[in-house]
Image 1 (cartoon, helix red, strand yellow):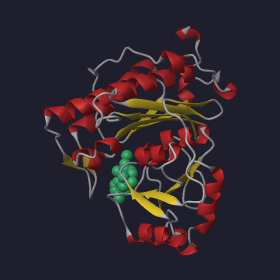
Image 2: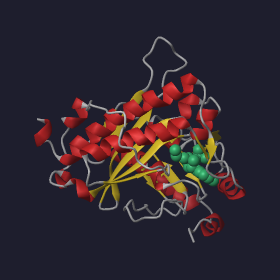
Image 3: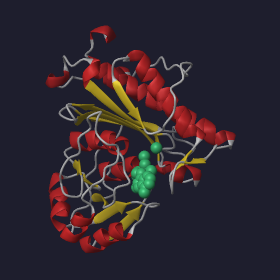
Length: 307
Ligand code: AMP
Ligand code: MG
Ligand code: MG
């Protein structure tokens, strides 16, 4: 079965397995106690877990799909002796493949990898904010996404630790149950650790009932996926393509939308610059997304134009 499956399904099924393994690495580094923190820039830490998880994810995907472009957040020389992941997710492998992807070969996919999203929160012990993100793009657009949450249930020792969510636009989602946000309430989720005056200005103009400040693009989109927030608003250029590719695929698969704050989608071509310079605006319902695009003030839009 596996060898006759479309490349896209084999890629998704391997991405799920390798994201699970990256979660093991992230927990192992934390339990050893020495995080090996390096500052890449202002408020931009990297740990041993970011490094080892990326080497594992890219090393394994490269072995199986040597002709594919894979772009990871961390600037690391790829090592040949990676921890091999021999599993594959059978359920994802056996999904229906979107018609337009059945015959696409590996050279035509681009994979965006954030080996550990929410590093600042990982170092601060806010462990449920941590995710592993693997997004698959074809013809510039996200066509598949995997979000692994290594510390799901970590405060509940009777339940299994960690979970993996996936989404394929046109096919569906798995690993979680989509829940719509509460009607008649405007719950906005935004950055916890990268606040700026413009981000604040946008939030004030939207007059939310509640502002949730959490870490990571993956975790913020998860709050949208499970009905805890109406929209993710970040009027600032700090987020990158590896932060949004997988979350956008999953949101799109459940009828939501992720764009810049002007309402224009990002391109995920391999030649694209990494920063999402025009900010991030996402919602689980496309009507909500439309409302937020219309209500972000022009003054904020002019300040976050990407130039
Ligand atoms: P946050 O919402 O602040 O947790 O950020 C979501 C993602 O975007 C994380 O991967 C952050 O590392 C990244 N990010 C956002 N703003 C910045 C920034 N000013 N500098 C570096 N990374 C950022
Ligand atoms: Mg990130
Ligand atoms: Mg990261």
